[in-house]
Length: 84
Image (tube, rainbow, N blue to C red):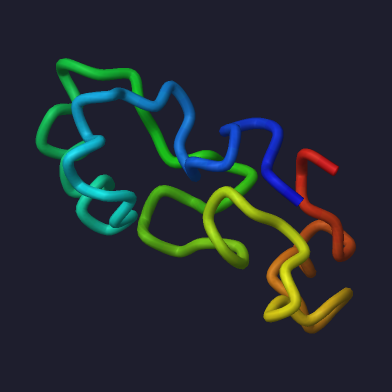
């Protein structure tokens, strides 16, 4: 399931200036930190916490690699992603 909050990018207010980073989430987080005065882009709080910790795959929820329920990446929210 594609995250409805970020449209599958893993980031809110996705800035085209990071397109050259080829979706590398760690590089994009570093870019956001370096340009925080120039952008309102941020990690999608449905996908992660902005510290490089992601709930499952950034921008995608309920993949086959995500264990369900209390053992999965959305255990903090009763087993459901926030945009569910």
